[in-house]
Each structure stands twice: as C-alpha cells, then as structure tokens.
Length: 315
Ligand code: ASP
Image (cartoon, rainbow, N blue to C red):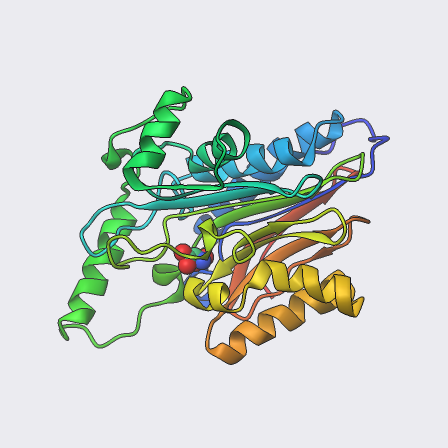
C-alpha cells in the first residue's frame, strides 16, 4: 500500500481470519506468508473503498468477499464440512448508522454469503433467512450460486476425516484450534463517522447438520452501532451466543463508559468464564481498534487513513 497518496479521510478498518490459527510451532514460513498475503489483500480491498470516500458498509463487504474467496480461510471457498460432509454457511452484516442488519444461516449454494446477508438487509423485510430459502433468495437477487463442491478443499476433507476418527475413538490426539475454528470478519469506521461490521463462516468441522452459530446472530457474532462500536467475533459460537458478545461490547461502552479495548476484553472474559474461547475485532467511533483473543493466535490486521497495513497472527 506504500505508493498511495496520503488520504484526507479519517477512517479505520480491521479484519480477522479466525481465531483458529495453526499452533505457532506448526506454522511454516511459507504458509504464514500465504495467510499474511490473504489478509493484506482483504485490507487493501476495504481500504480502497474507504480511501475514496466510500462507506463502512461497502468496506466491510469488500474485505469479507476477498476472505470468502480465499480458500485458506473458513468462509465461502475453503469452508469446513459438517458431520454429513456438507457445507452450511453463516454470515451477517450490520450498519451502525441505521441499526439495519441482515444474515443468512446454513446456506449451501451462495458463493459469497456476506453478499446474501447484505441483500437480506437491503432487499427484504427480514433480518435472517436460512437454508434453502436463503439460497433461493440469493438467486432471485442475482447473486452467484455455485455447486457445493466449489467450497471444498483437501485440507477441510482431512479435518473432517480426523474429526470422525476421533469421534469413533480411533484417534486420541485433540483437535487443534485450526481444525475447529475459523471465520472471517471486518469492522470499519468511514470518513463520515459511520460504523459497520460483517462476519462470515463455515462454522466448525463436524458440526451437526443444521447447526447455526454466532456468526449469523446479530448481537452475538456481529454488531454495529454508531453510538459505540462495530464488532465481529470468532470462536466457540455457542458461548458467543450465550454471552451475546457483540452487543455486550457495545453495552459496556454505552452504559459503563468503558473504552473499546476495555469493553472488548471484558466481554471476551465473560465468554471465557462460560467456557468459550476465541477473539474479536472492534472499532469505535473515533477509529480506535481492539483485537483481543483468548486462543493461541488470531489472523488479524488493520489499516488506518495513513494507508499503513498491519497484519499479525500470534501475540
Ligand atoms: N464462531 C464460529 C461459529 O461458531 C466459528 C469460529 O469463529 O471459529 O460458527
């Protein structure tokens, strides 16, 4: 992003590629470089929107689409498989200026679930559509549908096989975070002060058919409110739902007057106390960013108005 002219806009964008990183010891340099490149591409896509005066909702959409298209991440292409060997995709988006929101759950054919979530927000009277209804709605709105094998990668097939062996007691090793988690998300503040958040996932490997996680649930995996912050989470979805993670960060800021980083840490600690691990990214209305996590790592990055892209994986 070096050669760009300095922006006159004040904005902020943060993204994550999931709290399910490989253990540091197993992360080979080449693989790490691929993750970093993927994150940088997503940041650049969002930055290009914000830098030219575009909206935060367009920026988070653009960043998440790039991550959904990247087979390394557990969303869109590269999504994990459920116990039936199928992909069921969850995504949501929220506009902090209007508190409008949209989501899809357990979608099977939509190439970019975040685009469908956005279409639900903008072109339907509803907040969430699930299953075949979500696929049919996306088709009706002109979004690209694919055959489910488009989403499948070798790595996810291996993860499912390992999970099934464990279930049958034929493998004693525990699943790594990389086998379990993943998810992508983005939060942004644009130059006119609007906040937005979006999240997209395949869920986790070997989940039950029909299971829906926090990623589709507004207030849990995704939340945005211009009064406070925009949040996107990744981790043990059931606990994020029970801890109402995204809204909790916002509520702590609003009612306890905590900073975004204090609120994000406290909300994540509440989820950890229930037994759930993971992380989140959040940005407040002044562009301050928080990215706490309770796992070994979280693929993450941010870019501000100066165009400097920062990407990290571990602590
Ligand atoms: N939160 C996602 C879910 O439960 C998974 C993850 O972020 O790792 O579906």
